[in-house]
Image (cartoon, rainbow, N blue to C red; front, side, top):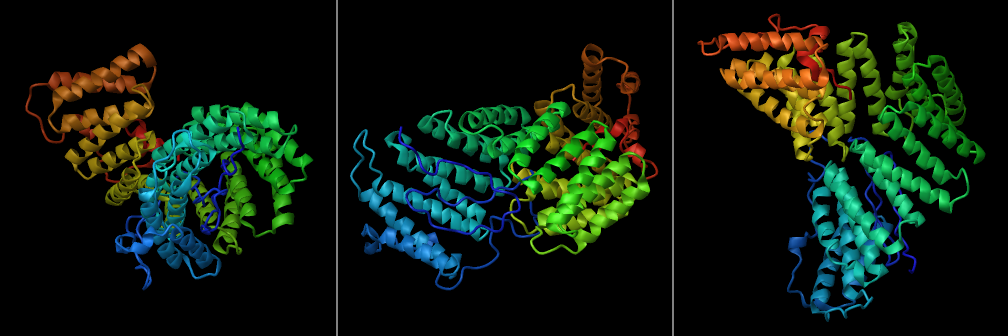
Length: 604
């Protein structure tokens, strides 16, 4: 089968600069929008959405609706290519994307007219004609929208673009279809719609495999790209399966200990670490480090040393972790400078290690060293690097009972990210953590507002993960403290549905929601519903989880009380609700994270 140029997908780093739009030629893959990396990962709704521009187009720039569809010049088959060239020249000359957008919209309309007037394709024919020109024009149009931060407007052209080519007509059509699905996946990722994004990547990979076969090196690159997307979505089993396939392809086509294999092993280490398989993660990192040493990649070796230190710390091999961190620190200081953000990131890791080993003075010293770097970043430092570092430091301050300082760092992190596209999930995570901290401080209204903002962002992104279920549970707990019982009940019910689907009924977070919902039903006078839930929980514990858990006796006692009081008139503030409402309106951290509040003990 003929080679398909451009059918390769290379992961775009999270710290890439804003997209520079270029107009591809027929043999090039259209521009790709950078994928966010974490979830996680999004801007506050108090700010303009990444898909909505708060700026009006410059004078003279038309929108799609402003194009005169009756303009006879649009029928000229030479007009579309000419306008695309003008769009390319507008970008190259620095005229800006607005001018290029005008040309691209008109070019797309011209190609549409030419496609409508063209003769139907010959069955089995491979000539793309105006169909492929239209697909390319739609790709370019979407890329320009993305460069303007108008991601919502980029989606419709790409959805149209993936329907234009027919992969059965040959490799050129397959290339266009593959590129369209991958570009659409990247754009949806920037909007925080991770599930839809992954579906597009999966379809793109399917087209690529059908055209190139399962063992082509370019298929391996796309497999790794999709594996990284699965990691972002915390679908680690699928990520592991694809990463193993990538390793097999690269071992078959590359020299032993190649850079491609090293990259695959680093990703596999991340997956293994996330699944708690630390020994295998360590093995992959050691092999990756050996490959990087052989290639003279000193900085990459240092980065791997940091990852190795993380694994050692997870295994409680603290002396070996310190050695790995210090080794990396020496390299980063000499190669990047003592104020580089990578140096700060190692300081944060050392701070966490010393905190875990009880050396709080050393931990605080490393936190302060990192903060000095983040507060005066060197040129080239991305806001994502700073925000990530501040978030990690805030977790350390929170754990040493300095919640106010931790809150300040989280607020600063959120402010850095709020104007960045593709960060909805990250900001939602920060708001959820702030909600937990407000709760421990007894600031229940602030906690509810923070959770509500996080829930709004996650809903907008179509989030249905277990994390979303946990945040809903947390918001419900805050509503209980504010005596908004009906609202709390609705939130607990939604959280129950999500956690049952994502984790099953025996998961601790699911059981925690059951307990909270039973108490809320009791408070609402729905005694039979509360009894039914507690009976279900006790049955699960007896049959599948065992009765040694201290929650078992507590839940058994609550059920006995409800059964005893069933049929009597009830006060609004029922006994079960007393287990949830804090009479002092300022719970200690122990109370907020104890067995009645199991949902608040989640890790970010």
